[in-house]
Image 1 (tube, rainbow, N blue to C red):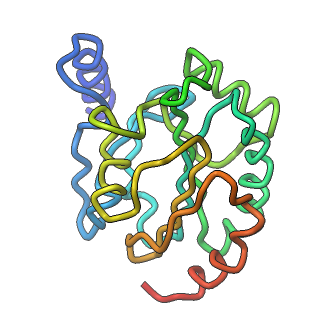
Image 2: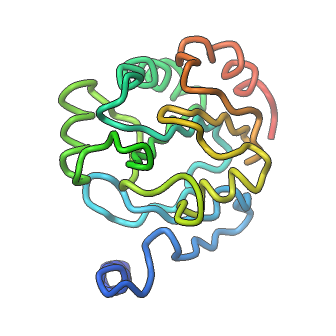
Length: 187
């Protein structure tokens, strides 16, 4: 049944009648901010962001050809250091600033082969304006604002609420204290 739903969603996308990101991810108790489904970068399979409820999330819009691209290394280091304590880093590739590779497969290969990225990454999508994916629209509606450039970061608490957002200039290592504080907080 899941395979059939996936095929139908893909055909809707190809026909321009919908997108994987617009398919509701109804999950009991899932915070509104996370109640979205996005395609997995490696194969396009639908992934509900609700699977990350109860975790501390660091969401980042990424790009392969940006001066901030080496931040992948720091993001991966944070993920490895804190994932067992409940942190997940989520990467959202975007070509909104004309600095991303052309295909999801190219992006996936680049991230893994160049930086060893193992944290969850989603299909390339817009993160600003009218064409922004629903998750980034929800971030903006929550008062976190739209990304001003690649590698803009959003820290989300275990309760599914935005804690803060950080500019591209904020290197991942500088978020350690905020992440540790969020990991200690109860939902």
